[in-house]
Amino acid sequence: MRGAGRIIGFILIALVAGRPSASAQEFRYSTLSKETIGIRLKQVAGKDSQRKEKLKELFMEAGCSEHLHEQPVRGSKLPNLECVLPGSSDRTIIVGAHFDHDTSGDGVVDNWSGASLLPSLYQAIKNEPRKHTFVFIGFTGEEKGLVGSRHYARTMTEEEVERTDAMVNMDTLGLSSTKIDGTGAVEKLIKALAYIARKLNLPVAVVNVGAVGISDSQPFAERNIPAITIHSFTQEAWNAGILHSPKDKLSAIRMDDYYQTYCLMSAYLVLLDLLLPLSTDAGSR
Ligand SMILES: [Zn+2]
Image (tube, rainbow, N blue to C red; front, top):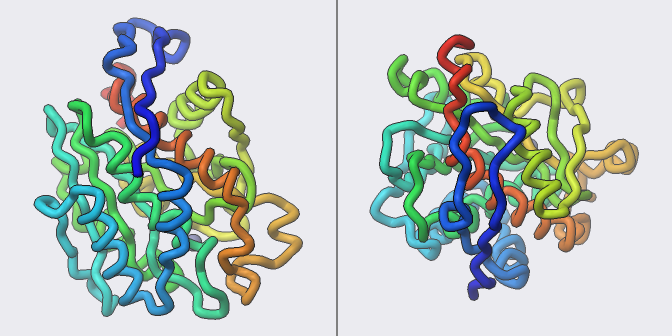
């Protein structure tokens, strides 16, 4: 089921001097209903191999079957799963989330919450032409030490790295409203998210989790690709010991917060498509 298409009529200002304004026409996307997002979250499978298959199924349901690939990963039994939404240019934005989980809990929060959102984000932005080619990736082996994302980032050619304008990673959503890990995140990506959240009247805050654990944005940051990790972690969630424990189950997800994160991320990807690359990017690499 599809929610109403969203058009935000506003002029992009303040973020970057000298950028042309975006028209309302360009800023169009179609978020799915909260019901659909909830159904996909509840379809969490037990084993990682089943999660990979389920993710594949959801990508196909979302309309991505022609550009769906498995990338074999050295050191992992399971591959990365990649769905490509071709744009009008070869500039690329990577959107990632790991589908594997720590088996001491159900791994719904960490990280079926992120992985199952990938097809729904694809669906939200696919109906309008985009400048960027979007690559949605479900990573394998994050819990084993970023195995899938490391493999992906390391096997990118210099040319592929050069044309990648951003890597947006989602890990552990729905415990609270949208949070940004400021550790290692590129400031312009943080600012862009804060900007669109304000425009949509949706909450977002910076909560650093760098000390708790690194995530799949790191291998991309190491290759100087502007990267950001979105999560929902708070001090309370940390104190409650939800991650990597039996408490990581469906009931830990706050559905309203989770759905708001989905809506925010949909708009964020459209904004990044219009905004990137910044003219200052050329000098920063
Ligand atoms: Zn995780």
